[in-house]
Length: 582
Image (cartoon, rainbow, N blue to C red; front, side):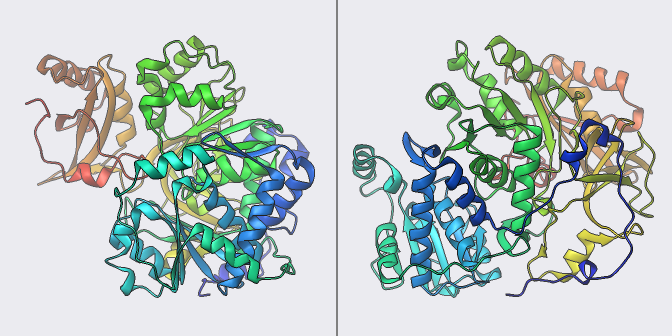
C-alpha cells in the first residue's frame, strides 16, 4: 500500500518508565489503559450488542438505531466488496456529515480497507491531489459538487464514482421536497458504467453472499486524515485502529464520563480528526448518539439546539463566537448542555470568559474547557476538565498520554514555566505520513528515553501541576532584533481591550529588525474608530515590552478563515490593505 513503516518503531531499545506531575489527577486504573486487538468496526459491533435498540445517529430528524446502523454498514461492506475492494485499498470519502459517510467508514474498516476522509468543499486541484496521492480507485462524493470533479476526473485513476444526495437519508417527505427544490440547481454526471448513485451502489450488495469476516487488528491502518496545510504542504496522516479505541476511552469514558443516551452534536466535520474521533466514533462506542449536522448555520443556532438538545458540544472558537453573537438565542434554555469543549485553535481568554458568562445566563451547568490535539495523534492530546481546569490552559495530558516541553535545538527538557516546543508521546500516534518518509522522520523522533515522540512544532509551557499553556506555532514565532516574540501574548493584551472582539498577530518582514509584529483587529461593534486605535496602542505600550508592540495595527470587519474554521495566517501575512472602514 505504500505506507512508510518507520524503522524507529522496530528498534529494540530499553524504554524508561514515563511519569508526569499531572498523573495525580487520575486513578491507577485510568492510567493503565489496555488497547484490545480490535478494529473500529469491531467496536461498533460491540456497541450493537449492548445498545441494539438505542439511537445511534440522528440526521435531520431521522433516527437510526445501533441495530440499523450495523445492518447498513454490513450492506455497504458487501457493495464495496462487489466493486473489488480488499484489504489495504484506499477509498476516498468526500462527504459532509451525512450518515453515508459513517456507513462507508465502518464498511471499509470491516474489509481492512482505508477511508481517505476528504473535505467536500475541496477545490479541483485539492480533490485531484487527495485522490491521486492515495492512489484511490473509488470515490464517494456529494452529487452537488460534481462540477469540481468533471474537469479533473480524466487526470485520476478512478474506476468507480458513487454519488450521494443529501436527501438519500432524509425522511420521505423531506427528501421529496429537497429534490424538488434543487431541480436544475446543480450539474449532474452523465450516466456511465463507472458512475452510480447511492441506491444503485447499495443494490450491488445483492450480488455478494455474506462476507466471511476476517478480523482486523488494532495496528491495521484505518483512516487517512489530511493535515490543515496552513503552514506548509498538506499531508496524508495515516491513523491506525488503536488510536480510535484509545481516543474513545480517554475522552468519552474517563474525562467526559459520557453515558448511554447522551447526545453529541457533530458540527465538527468527519474529515477533521477531532470531529471524526470525538464527535462521532467516541459517541458510538459508548451508547451515545451523534447528531449529524451537514451544514452549520450560525443564524439558526437556536433552532438546532432546541431540536437536538445536545449533552455535549465540541467546536472551534469561531463556533462559540457565533453562538454568543446570535440574538435569537437570548431566551434559550441550555440546562441540557453539560459539556462544552473548544479545540482546533487557540481559545482567547476574553472569548472564554464571555462564553462562560453566556452559559451561566442560559442555565447550563457547563463551563467551556479547552483541549489540544493534532491529526498526527488523532486530535485529542490534552484536555481541561470541568473540575480540573486552569483558565487559559489547554489542559493536562489525557490518561496515558505524555507531554514534554523541550528546547527545539537540543531536545533537552525545559523546567516548569519555560516556553519551548511541545512534544507528545501517546499510543495514538499516527503510523506516519503516506509516502513521506523524510517528513515522517522529522515528526516522529526516538528520544534517549527509548520512546517515540511527536514533534508538534507548537510552542508552550507546563506549570508545576502539569497544566499546559499554548503559546502558538513555532513558525508563527516572531524574531525581532534577536528577541523572541510570541503572537499569542500580544493578542491576549489587545483582546483585553473592552472594544476588541478578536485579534490575530503575524510577523512581517523588516529591513533591519528581521521581523516585526502586525496586529489585525476586529472590533465588537464592527466599526473603525481612530480613537479606539490610539487607545489600543496605548494599552500595548503600557503592557508590552517596546520590541513587542506591533509596528502596525489594521482593523478588519472579519478575519479570513481556513476551511477548518481557523484563522488563515498565511493570508494575513500577505494582507497589505488599509483599515476596512477607511
